[in-house]
Length: 190
Image (cartoon, rainbow, N blue to C red; front, side, top):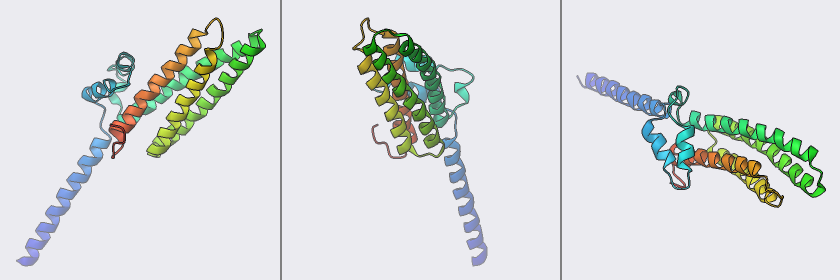
């Protein structure tokens, strides 16, 4: 009788633990909810109108989990950076001012480094290396800020390029909020 009770107890414990593990795993891979998007987009420092516009409920967004949402944002930023990089190269080649040409060339180098930052970030995300992901996104934001600081010396102000850099930084900030407030087990900034 005692052996039967021990077997039943052990079997029951295994079932309960199994359910706990399965439910924990299911939460990690669940699709992002409207409430989570609202929480992300209303965090301090996030451009909420941009965030809600980019993360509005679409077929693609509704199928993503939190990691997938960061990957979506990184790929979205990457397309913007690649497009801007091509335009910066044209400006660098066609500008007659040698001072401005060197400024555009420096931004070209920074945007090329940003492309590497995306690759680094995606690899870190895939490996669940959240510190590496934070570093990759942070490096990207630094590259954009440095370029922006250089561009403000050009007259007339190349507002298009400045605006594109700001957009990338704002999108990166959304990724950082998702990382720091939702993906990390130990919340560092939230």
